[in-house]
Length: 196
Ligand SMILES: C[S@@+](CC[C@H](N)C(=O)[O-])C[C@H]1O[C@@H](n2cnc3c(N)ncnc32)[C@H](O)[C@@H]1O
Image (tube, rainbow, N blue to C red; front, top):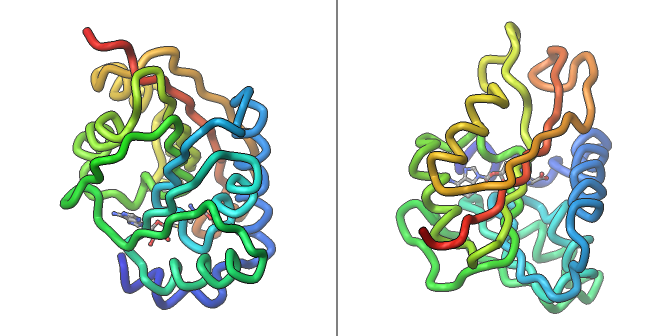
């Protein structure tokens, strides 16, 4: 996985990937009232297609990724645009979690790459402050796309991991969107419940 994206890093910012990231970014902006006081974790943030525009509006963004080459691209663009409130971390949070907690965790087109969904949702919960929100954008599971998620199943899983106020919407759908097939891009938002 790590090597896959190292190999893709220099060409990742394609018109399609920029378009999808912009869709997710706009949906995040619509969902979140006041970005300016938010500390955000962009999990699997890659080349920073979401990190950079969000950092311009938020208090800070921590971009975590396991691909050093994807991170290198993001760092380069942040330097060029003189954006200073981004922390870049090459780290596997399933193995080495952070001490820090965040107001928002953005997970754009990363969840289907994660080897263990339960461990990943628990890790998101661990990294969120009380009432913090996780925003997951990914593809819906279809007959042709087995890598995606069944939204009802994902929502049930989130509830099992003590998330509440769970809401999903389809952001975009098109032929050839994912692995050459018809696909639907969703956004699911869930809040870390108050301690029970
Ligand atoms: C399709 S790209 C999405 C990049 C970015 N989120 C976006 O929407 O443009 C998937 C990213 O997830 C990263 N990734 C995969 N597994 C990961 C893991 N276990 N921890 C952190 N990042 C991971 C990859 O290195 C890659 O940068």
